[in-house]
Length: 455
Image 1 (cartoon, rainbow, N blue to C red):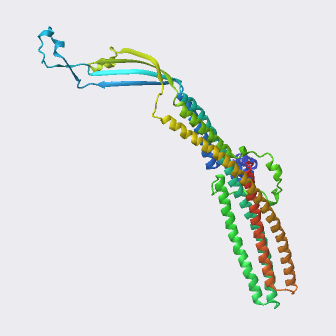
Image 2 (image 1 turned 180 degrees about the vertical axis):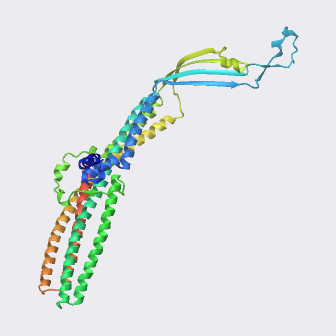
Image 3 (image 1 turned 60 degrees about the horizontal axis):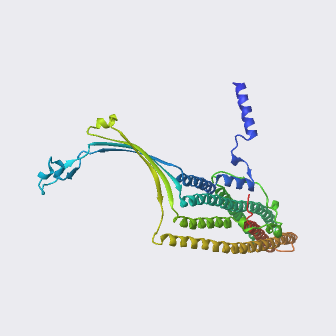
């Protein structure tokens, strides 16, 4: 048993060291990892991919209309009461001249009780303008679903990126708040010793403790907020919210140097998925107008049929197949629309109006995209300038706090000034992280406006 246990334990160690027994959630996730997970696992992406598959099946369905159509039919009829047919009496007289003029008709039953029929029918479209347009529309519809998939991908990247940065910022804030908490704890311990030695009053110690307790509550609240932001990230990724996830990355690693001219020099409206989607919808409107015109074209099709029928007074004679007789036919069908009460004309005018509306919407979207780029660019510039100021404010607040604390320890200032300096420092830190988040969101919105928000 010992050699076997040794082999099993060695095999287990190898598996663990190679990572085979770790689930995908047992590693650190970078932003790219989170985005890729969402693109693979989120419900929105899965449904968008299913829509593409459904569109492909729709193309196949439309194409199948133009292929030969085959059908078979089987029918059995039991004439338990054969219908009576009335014929003139002269039909049954040997000498029609002897039949009175007012002689009543004679009722005769024609037919047999049991009838059977089996047939095979085939048809084939030779020319149908609507079918040709339908094929083009189905392919365009497939293209529309593929572009909808791209839009869902962009939205997923946007949502995951913002949620990732939220977790990252909350983590940085929590780390900084822990430092603030330790700093206030040290200040409180020093103030308490000074109080015990008679150098400060009790109100001074209580004032520091009050600030210390508030910092403790804020840290606990931020810790819960960080967990909530993680849950939101997992939700956006399509991950089970009960799973644990750890992120890697630092705010200091972010590149916030933006070359606006370089980013915008190759911009084209086609880069925006919304514009591309509307172009496809415009082509669908154009095909709809062509389809309305095609309704006035002749339609030509071919058909053929082959079958057998039988009839007997006894059901056994039907099943025996002794009296089955063959029949068959083939031909062509030509349908030429002549006048539809002006319905086709009005339908064509409606399709033309729809096309004009789409073309107007395209021009309006171009203007809206231009406005969005200008707005997002200015918003990003303003956010970067605000971030620079907030970073400077943190340095100033830290300098003020250290100076005030030193003066207090040397007996040249009051602890009230220290507490005010500490509050100012925490406010500066909060403003700084808010500014960081605004910069990140503005950067995402700017890249999205340029159609460059990709993995």
